[in-house]
Amino acid sequence: MSEYTISKIYQNDKRNLKLIDELLLQEGIRKDANLDYTCAMFDSDMNVIATGSCFGNTLRCLAVSNKHQGEGLMNQIVSHLVEYQFSRGITHLFLYTKNVSAKFFKDLGFFEIVNIENQVVFMENKRTGFNDYLENLAKNNRAGEKKAALVMNCNPFTLGHQYLIEKAASENDILHLFIVSEDSSLVPFAVRKKLVMEGTAHLKNICYHETGPYIISSATFPSYFQKDEIAVIESHANLDVNIFVKIAKTLNINRRYVGEEPNSLVTNIYNQIMQKKLPENGIECIVIPRKKYESANKVISASTVRQAIKDGNFEILRELVPKTTLDFFLSEEAKPVIARIRGEVNVIHY
Image (cartoon, rainbow, N blue to C red; front, side, top):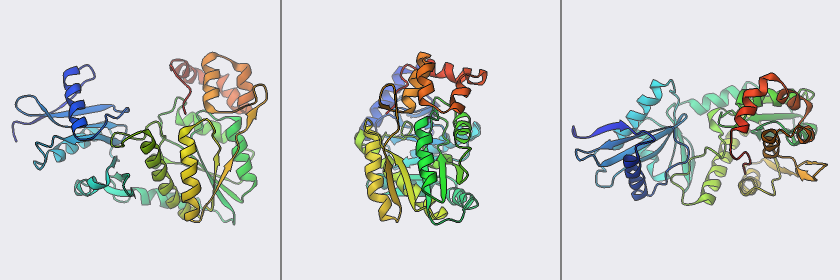
């Protein structure tokens, strides 16, 4: 065992990255698109016999060569990754794994949040993490017969978002508005939250919530153990629905509003799953047609807004966003965000 060593793998280390890819492939794992740290375990001949990676607060792409399984190597890889995460101040950790692997990670100190049969298990290293989140949400529970929810990224906040929020708020006693707080969007979370709150300040029956680490965007959902893109979308949607149902029970939410998205495969699959699963849990799923902008008779989307900002087309922007969002993007404060958007090759995300 002393012959085995674990090392960080750098992005320019083509030899070992190739060996890691080969190991992942052997173990039926695709390399995840989102990784910010990778390590490998080597034998005395410098063969890669185990690997693991991180992205943000998650552990990903964990694999041990089938020739070395049963030697406790995965324990060492996970311990190395946990130590690395702790060294950069990240102590609340998460992982997504196959159903058959869940028991192994329980033995390593991870606790199940949601288990989607034959698809994915979502786990964390804090025994009461999700329950603590739910208890914190319960502090903002308000009385009302019709209690609705919206979950939004708002990257950035548009007239389409505002229209959907206004409609949901007008049709219910209380609207619980969840803003995806994962900071992986071109517009930072602090800005997104500020623009949402400013653009809805005229509505008095909204409870604002951060999603914390429990609801993440499809852009960063791990895909490495899923067979294809459809399986990735379906498992993410099922996971999100199960998390949301637990949240809804905590806040007595009985309706969820979603925007129709005719051009998005991801959102269409999501909506279909929600329309099936939510009613099974006593929650009405209400799909609202998207708001259009007049000059082009096209639906308003955050992608269109980002493209207008990238192109410097502020005339179109005036048709797409509330005054509060427009004022922000015309301000000095917005310059770093605009530079980030303009530096991106593709700002159209589906």
